[in-house]
Image 1 (tube, rainbow, N blue to C red):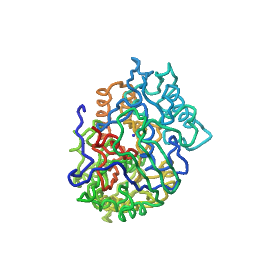
Image 2: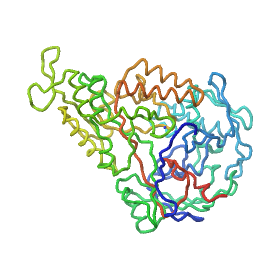
Image 3: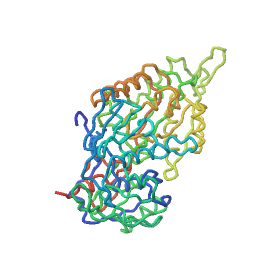
Image 4: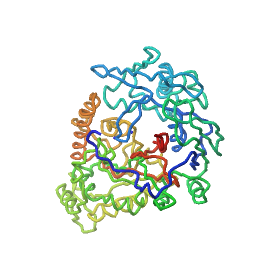
Length: 514
């Protein structure tokens, strides 16, 4: 959960001259074994979200510069306080069943998400559950006008308006019609799916008329289908997918995910004072981890925002460097030395006890990518160079969660699934859901609150810059890298600069259209 002033990293590192442009159809291999029903509000699998996003549309879309743009809403405005936003719908939009889009459809779709998100009797509040933090109430003013009272009076509110919209009478139904460029013609769970261009779409008709999907149980099965030419295009986050390079018969388009990898540091641990946390930050070689462990399928970052976007404070990047001597200096300032010459730093406690700088380090592995153990090894080796000992223990995801939730850890290598809205408050404000490191700062807390009052782009961006300045100074944890994946294809089907997870077909509806 980004022109104005942004400079973008191109995520399509391929030469169009080396790729054949897509024709009227495309065959795509994806991993899908859990999706038994078409339920756009309740996606079960990562790749199916990309399918849903060309079938169902939202009030707002996010463009290549990661800025909100009109989609089903042709315009909007907010009250002077930002407490209420009014959206004006396009009047020429229909669902694939012929029903015209109205404000009631928007209200019903949002309310369906909110009801689930606020249901305390269930634990799974749905993929769009964060909508509850933004919408206080929603109503139809007239047939084409929606009024929303919001909990967060800020520019970031617009990013939450990217939920799918279906007919009011079908919000709880399987396979509801959408308003997007494609319509679902066939769906056979665990086998295949067929999309056909939506003849009644309110924009120009796509050049690609048919998209056929072959479902696979495993990521390896997806890649095998590509190798044996059973499919034209596949999506992969597997490290093995890094072997595919753009050539005369195939292209590899890197896409960015919402998965942010971080090294958490318990701010309440006696050993992890500010100086020690800063020393650890100086010791980590992110580029080595990305190159050696992830085969390049990650993008280094210093903040919980994507580098190269309008949100990212690149003016501070030069301060984040690997500097072993500076780390040693900071540790010495904190009183750590190897007094008994055993290779591990120590210092005397107030009670006269000699305590080693030895940290509990937990991590978990993903089902498809057994790589975190290698990343942990590189990190612990770097820390041991200056005498920081790590007691490493691999765990299950739930095991690590229990440890960090209870505050019973020193270091933890984890990932966050970041929301579409650029608001890091959940990571940095006391008592918030993602602030596992127990970071507390009155200044940061106020900055995050101020961010949620900024109604325009300029003010919102300035607050994000200030938040990142404070993040650098306080070093609550270390942002490492954003995971990336590859679209591997025999055909070029998009000219978008920013191909994103959950939107891997971005631009297919406009490609080749005059």
